[in-house]
Length: 526
Image 1 (spheres, one colour):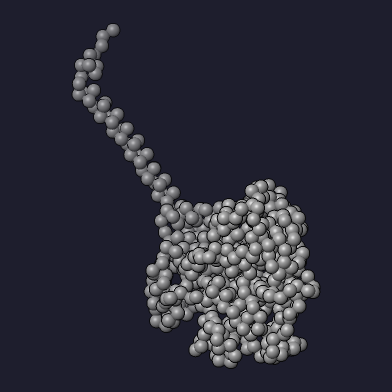
Image 2 (cartoon, rainbow, N blue to C red; image 1 turned 90 degrees about the horizontal axis):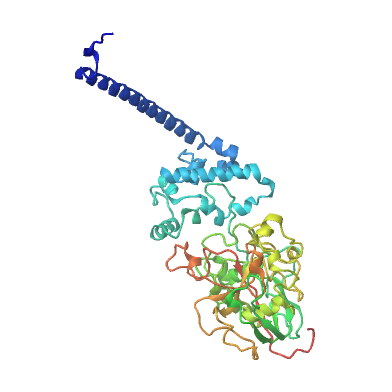
């Protein structure tokens, strides 16, 4: 057989090059098609993704998945829905960052949380009022989103109060968020008008107290009246005695500043059956408020006492006043209240020392609480309690705290008292004490020494706080648990210069109760 060698690649270099070029062109064509297809797929993905982002950012989509049943209703009542400009602010405008990768990551996290809540949580058991508080809401709003719309912080018609607040914000952006002052603008909440009643305003069904203070020299429980007013409060005669102050190392959730335990002897004294209520505080305010800022103050017979300026916001947080514990006042204001009360009643009132407070709280008991229970079996910090629940039947009879307090104060005497008849010693609101705080206040005492009526460190920057509040975990309700004021931190959002010496802007779970000193001999009652 004969072969035409001219067709062999070896014998025809040009043919070989041609085939190589064809292979390259074919490969390029395939590659080009893949690039095109990839590009096309990318374009489709981007468009689809953008459409998905746009759709899932609509108010309708948020409403369909959001487990809060009232969010849409309250939003439509707010100034972010109906306003003079006609601009409607949508869900994502406040609850997501303005743009970028951060927007997408926060969107994914927020969406996942709401989907999980809708599918797996019992919506009827969620405390929506608690969720609307600043402590929760501050995590789901962004300063950047507020500023995107509110470019001019000093617009026409802004009040002097608003100017001061915005200047303060510009100087403290890292510490203060817009929502600190504007919590209710996105979801409507009815604002109550601040009122201060006059001490002599007639009250149906109540008798006006005489102009002279009541005489109470016998050491027993009695009712104190504020002269020429309708306000009265009960005092419990706390017997003198000895107790061990602090906690042992084996007590669950014990903190280092609670020891070593100290033997203390306490002299008899009277203590308020309840924390000072708004009814009591508002008489003080009405009679002493700084002149020129409150007309009722001109009626005051107590010219020797300087009282508070008007509060910057709503001091009762909208929860109501009356028999609820007064709060948001500073330690200085509480001290001035005691000075005023001493003057109008002719008796010596003051804040309790830390030792007096713990002695009265324990009421002859020596456990973690004045009722039988174990902090480990009550704490929400415990994984077992989170999974299987805790038996709170006993503690719920005595204490308003995070498990039943709905994140707000409650009227006095709505729980059972401790063995000596004192209400809310461990809950409702925390309480100021007279002492300066010292983390090592107990360490200077020896085990064989009995300390008589200790008054804490001679100097200090902060004051002791005792007891828990409506937002405290069970571990913070122990009789020996200690805390202290954080004066500067509790005034961060106060825009005034100088800052108020009367009202805290950033704490709403601290109040106080009074002690009356007993200077005679115990010859009756307790």
